[in-house]
Structures are given as structure tokens and as C-alpha cells.
Amino acid sequence: RHHIDAAFLHRVADRFAVTVSVLRIAQLSVVKIGSVQVGNIQSGVSAVAVSPDGKSALVTRTGDNLVSVLAIDGEAVRYTGEDIAVGPSPYGIVVAHDGLAALVANVATGHGSHDTLSVIDMRAKPAAVVHTSTVGATPEGIALSPNGRWCAVVLLNGTNTPKGSVTHHSHGKVVLFRLDGLKPTRLGDAVVQ
Figure 1 (cartoon, rainbow, N blue to C red):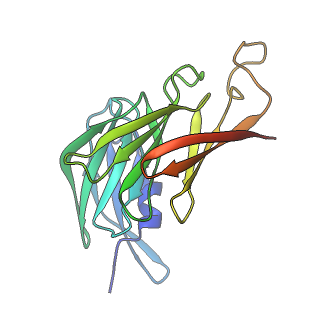
Figure 2 (tube, rainbow, N blue to C red):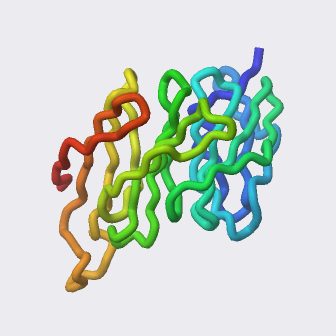
């Protein structure tokens, strides 16, 4: 029996084609079986996170500050037309193990002034952002612990800016949040060399 492997869906979002490719993975074979258009050329499709039950996926759109919802039914994947407004330039995304929340790393300008973590309540109809926290400069990586209690956000922290810039740093950072239900609490950060 063939199926869509969620681990590969997030690797095939195509920012310039405005699509998410759908792959069939069987044995050692990977075959593209379709694609789903999400938004328009300005949307900037970035990342995909699949729900734990495999019935939906969320797609970040950096160009228009949205997260789009896809419906998955076996090998059939379609854009539902539902979009969730999040912070500026959403980039990375994860869905909690219980499917009740999604967390989005919003890059904004990439200089730290508006870079945030958005928490989406997936139980709300329609799904909506319920908390936003400032994280620091350029949150490009995001991960959630298996129990859903801890969120780590990886920051470029100005390492991508020119030396001599007021925003330049020689090291990245990891910021740790504790999640109490849908509420994130920043616990601290660590330098990444």
C-alpha cells in the first residue's frame, strides 16, 4: 500500500512555483504524484507541517503573512482555501503531537525588531493565532518536544548581516519556550557557535 510520508512533504514546498509537491514513497522509491497550488507568485510558500493524524497540513507563506490549510485524504491533497493570518513573513512551522496547536516562526524583517513566534489554536473554527511572542533576530528553525511542552526556536541573530552593522552578531541563538496549553513562556536562550 502506498501513502504520503509527512516527513517528505515539508521538503518539497516550492517558493517560486507557489506549490506543495505530493510524493508517493514506497520501499526505496519516491515519485511525485501531484502538486497543490497555494496562493500566488507573491505568496512565497516556505514550509509544510503535517498534522499527527495525517489528514491536514499547514503551509507557511512568507510573502503575504499567511498560513494555508491543506486537506489530505490518502494521496489526494487539496488547498481548502482557509488561510490563517500570522506574524510578518512566517517561515518555519511545527504542529503539536496532539494536533491542538501549531507554532510558527515569523522572520519579519530579519533584523529582530518584529521577529516573533505565533501560536495557532487549531481547535478554533476557524483556526487563529492566540499568542504572539517576540523571539529575536531571524527565527529560521523551530522544533517542538515530543510531549508538546517545550519549543526551541533557532535564531540567526544577526549572523546574516554585514560585519559592522548594528544588528550583526558572530553567533546564533536558541530560545527555549515552555508551553502551558497554548501559552508560551520564554525561559531563556543560549548562544550557538
